[in-house]
Length: 248
Ligand SMILES: NC(=O)c1ccc[n+]([C@@H]2O[C@H](COP(=O)([O-])OP(=O)(O)OC[C@H]3O[C@@H](n4cnc5c(N)ncnc54)[C@H](O)[C@@H]3O)[C@@H](O)[C@H]2O)c1
Image 1: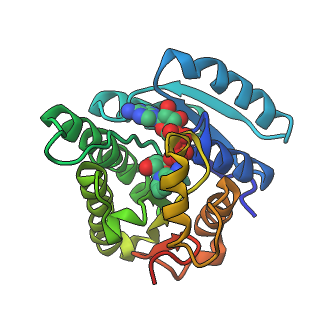
Image 2: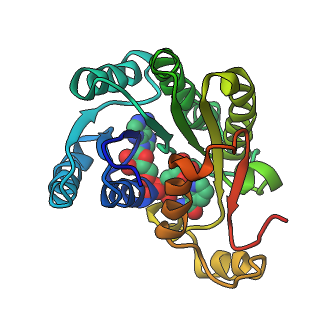
């Protein structure tokens, strides 16, 4: 389904990003693995080895997406190696939760800088290439809480609501150029990001999920594969909820 394509997936050494990388590779897509910190370096090489066994090529780029030049470098290195960028998945994201009375300015800034500005940085770098090649699929990772809000997450919810606005604007800008821009809004997915939740918090969340379970990374990766494929060619500017029915 994605044979011979090339996808940049930010923050792809674990969690949802890693699941998307493996899913895409299983469909024949070459993968650019991005990681930020030294502790993820081993995971990046392990993932590259795992994906290599599926018969696709990989490139590993260490970069902090919040840094404009570093984000640009991911895309430049991709172009150098593969000659194109068919798919961009803006997946890298962080949380720094607190109630507003205790949330400090740097907690707000860092979440916005990674989740929202980081996505912008990669979009800015990839757009000229996609325009020139006259095709592209962009998938931005939003969140259900960017739509419905969540106490203790004003920074994170603002960043994800911003990602949704950016997705819709860019979809309108690039629609005539054969470039699809969509967002996925996962609900609560079982990853390192949600491991920090207490049992009480998980119970409370599950009471709001009609499908009565946390999501799996594969639930998100399957939708990301659809949005990267030609099966979704007539879909743009959408926010696809993968949240067990939390928001409807
Ligand atoms: N897990 C959930 O329940 C959930 C729900 C909704 C949305 N999301 C979103 O899905 C995406 C993936 O989340 P996850 O649960 O897999 O989280 P995770 O913490 O397991 O993984 C996040 C990845 O992003 C990378 N990253 C963080 N900051 C970075 C930076 N500045 N530059 C490059 N990489 C960076 C991390 O190294 C890691 O690989 C995030 O955007 C997150 O906000 C997750």
